[in-house]
Length: 264
Figure 1 (cartoon, rainbow, N blue to C red):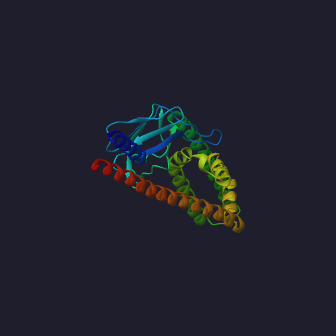
Figure 2 (cartoon, one colour):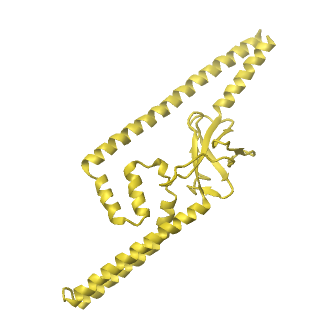
Figure 3 (cartoon, rainbow, N blue to C red):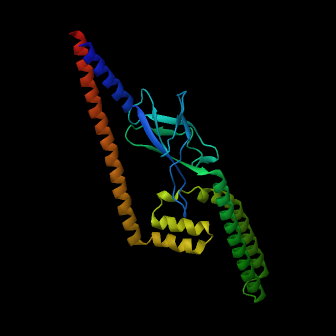
């Protein structure tokens, strides 16, 4: 009888640990010319735990979070790998949702590649800004020369142009950082093309594509796809809840069997 009790106790402990295990994986940032790949040897620590885990060669990790149940909040304390940084700099310290069924995705970016992409995007943006400024300035000079506008209007238009130019320049650094951190693995074909155009400074082409996105037929199709994706996620969440409830009942039955065995 003691052997049976020990077996049940072992199974109960194993299933409890499995139910409290958060799976996850770490990948690199997907770029236009290079999709993301699994990232090994990343050290990950969750708040409340002393020990850290390490991703395997496929970028996978698993950490036991005792006392956690589906939907509980979990918080990353640190994610580290030499030469890399998190795509989302605010991921550490943010409340995430524990799930023993749904893996946690963490995206990292090579710091050197990130800096190179930022510089490339900034350079393109400055070139476009300067070109647009010079084009508009020539138009204003021509207009005042041909007396299409007064000198007072010219001064007002010039001041407005310079203010817009300076404002755009002040935003370039943030814009470059945002687009250099974009994970192209999660973009659909239209969003992907728009982002590539913006990165390359092709703002007019990007604007044309954005208007295409808001074409009624295109919007309808994208909304339909988004609705189906949302339904799939909701169903996945419901499946997780159902499985968790069934697993809880199963564990309770095992516990009762163990307790009944002890009474005998």
